[in-house]
Length: 197
Image (cartoon, rainbow, N blue to C red; front, side):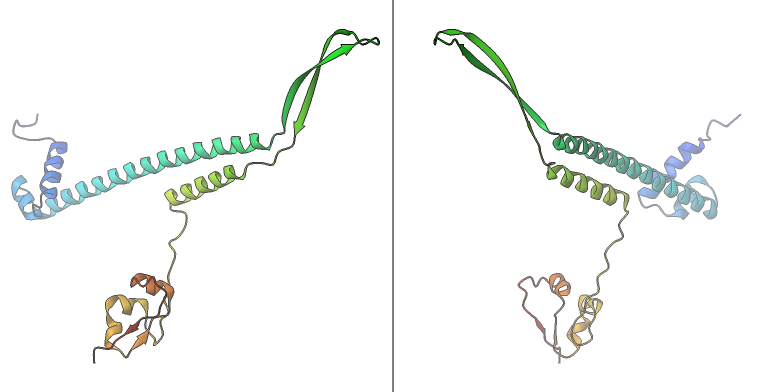
């Protein structure tokens, strides 16, 4: 039978999590529970692993919800696209007056007329479907990030530009459009980087 002063494992881990979130050290946590540093470290690692696991689950659920929404929109756009390809028919009723050979009206007759119009499919639904597919790819992380290779005259790399190393060399001209964009040069002109000498 557990002692009255003992707390359950769940309560213990909840308190460890609370202490860890507030910046307590592993040594302070070990002292609080009267355990070794190794045990307290294992508890902190367990709490952090559990937190990361819960965050991943929440992210996966959110991604799954967004993907379902994209799939629903895609399906509706597909149905609308298929419907837009169907021919349309227009029915009209025309009243025709009947006239006898002596010119007196004999009555009216109704004539039904149907006109079938051929239609081209609406391309805006295709655009919606493509956007949905791209959204699903983005949520799923299917596409790899794009790699950038900046080329700058004078043998400089983009990394050198970002670290400020370019300013220690001779005067250089930046010709790479991406490097210009990073350095907020959106006017398209070449910028000369003065040397520190």
